Image (cartoon, rainbow, N blue to C red; front, top):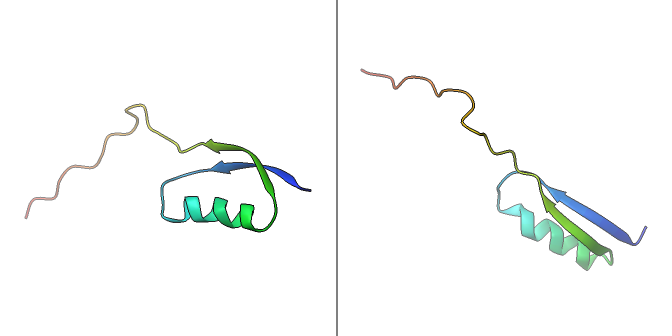
Length: 51
């Protein structure tokens, strides 16, 4: 198991560092795919709270 395909999901500070650590471990990264879920105007957000 020397070659891998990486799929990242969601934003965060650990995305690039995780990929770098995989490369530093001696694995060859073939593909990096970003599958972050993006809403296409899905659910309506709740109303603002008025105090």
